[in-house]
Image (tube, rainbow, N blue to C red; front, side, top):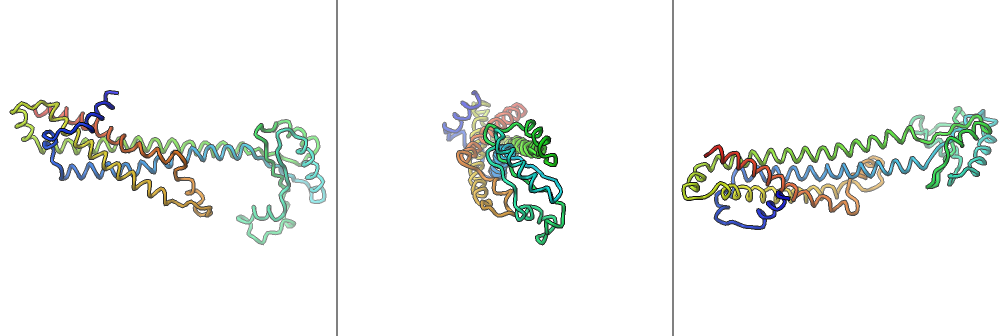
Length: 302
């Protein structure tokens, strides 16, 4: 709370005379503006990655959790009869919304990436696949396996659990990577602002000595540096955030297969408001970093 109140006071209360202590332009100004802008730009993409990974984890988990597949690996002359028997079992299974056997054309399309479009299913011992869609309540996979084993010996139920867990885990790790990137970006911003503040304090050592001679306190001098660098970080981060959001807005958004992974990397709904937190956070980081640097440097100049 003290940092928040101090930051508000620094941004809202102008001290014209104190502001003149810090040069309005030069290397430190450019460094602070560039560092804050670049880090804010990267933070927008880190946020987009983190939020999109969370959505993907939920989407993949929900979609795979409600689907299952039954493989009928019976001899060709028995395959249709066992497929019909499995479908009859599914019709009376609680928790099954719909179930249908895939056609030869659909199965050929699934195998085309590996075997080519000219694949003839009757030339290979390809099992018949049954697609099962569960209700929101879900089905009893263990009970269904027992019924299939008793009535359709060649049927194998795959509830996709072995596929779902790694996908959800991977998406969750991507989300953690996004938040870790944001923390790292904040740390780099703090380091760059600290370097710029130290350089400005060292360059104005003679001015600081004169101010002390005429009665200026270290708090007064420090506030001038804190205000100037905090405003620079706020402005730079705001520009970087806007550019980052524009870049995210122009990411692929269609159903193009080549860009299917990138389609989910944008913001959705209220998530477009989340990047608006970046400039105030950057200003807060600059406030704390400059405050610590100013106190340490002013004590060294005493």
